[in-house]
Image (cartoon, rainbow, N blue to C red; front, side, top):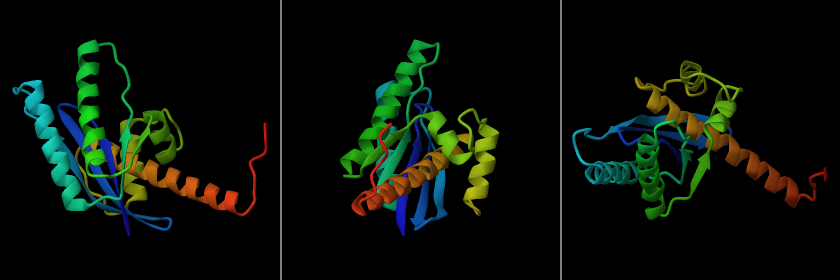
Length: 174
């Protein structure tokens, strides 16, 4: 069974989720959040995030990772801090030699719920439906599992397309 790691980055709270993939079957392996101390300085928080992610990667040995892309909000300082956390979340699996895919929030919601405008409660409900037995109490963990599910769906589509290309089927030109 292949393990995929999904990450929903944040400086205060980073959601993580690991799913198992066997063919078209998905199963929950684990999920949770990594919270950093809001009283600590930014470098200390980034180090704590990296250490927690490295430990998580060592414990679950995912074959691939996926991360939600950053959206820009009105507060420039908050966006910058989110970017720092996202950089650490991209770096940790890369340092472990794990390929990392990136997905826009709308793409994740589309893959899991069927609409890119889904709400957080809708995403959480569909994650519970797609991963029976998944237990989470934070939206950040549900979002991270959704990122992992999105990656599983996209990698399956890419594999099917590669097989079709190998069989001589070509995409029609527009």
